[in-house]
Amino acid sequence: MPESSSDPDECNATTVEAVAAPESIDRGVAAATASATATATATATATATTLDGRLLCAAESAYGVRSPYFRCGSFLRGTTAKLIRRSVNSVLVGATVDGVVVSFRGTVRSSTLDWFQNAATLLSPAKGEKFAGRVHVGFYRAVKSIWDALRDVLLEFLSSSSGGGARKPVYLTGHSKGGSLASIAAILMHFDPDLPAPERVTVFGSARVGDSAFREEYDRVVRQVTYENRLDIVPFLPPSRYIMEDMDENLTSVVDSMLWPDKRTRRRDYIWGYQPIGKRCYIDEGRKIVTEVTRELDDFRIKEFEEATFLRFDVFVEAHRSDCLGGYFQAIAPEVCMAGTGELLGHLS
Image (cartoon, rainbow, N blue to C red; front, side, top):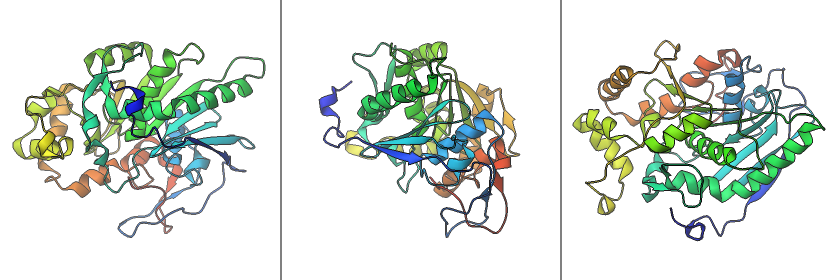
């Protein structure tokens, strides 16, 4: 793993911004943003009734902390959340009814997969870290670029929340790239003697972050739930050797172009070794959550990518979205979103 001095974000200052929690967490709120291409509408009107639903709200809040999703995440009244930013990397930390929530923002660029398009998708050992295996270079660097500031803010929240008693539990979350960063941060927390191990990590449409050795250790020490929506290709990327071998020629070509955008740097002999981590939960066509994700189901999903989508990029984008109109909210926290005549909420990533 390259030393920190090679981090492209090194010259960018890290900032910490205070964000006041909403006065009320239970009243309806107006739409935040609109999309000219939306074919349906939705409004966030209530807090989520489950832990994973509230973490999904927190994950969406990381895209815009003043969005209605900030309310449905049940951040405590009268408290101040903190937003840590460095270059394109950002994380929101706040106190909720569940504990201290750390929510990493996903990509904010126009393409949902553009963050694969750099040389940092290769696996590499993390020098100086205590965990085993190899990890995604780009995701690791992104977390490390804000780690010192995040660590300080976490310690501050934990100190203020304990009140002389037991510390509040820490939950990590994120959508898309944000979920990947949450996983890297979770393993760093586990091996940090001054921080508690995270109570739980819940991610949505998260890309893969490490190889089989990393997965073995991660799953042993971190409790993670990984939600994957139907036709969302991101949770399959970067791929394993098995995934690449199972794709047909057309899909392989599309994925290959994502992973090697600069054909001059392409390594034809490179063997992709990324593996999924955590307890995987699949959201099917009927918005039901399937808790047993088998190899047969993965094979079926790959065939769907090949046949049902016709490799249309907009289909992948729709399946990956994280707001009220996307499959993640409709399956995990449908009570939060109310169909109506309002404008589209949130971030279409």
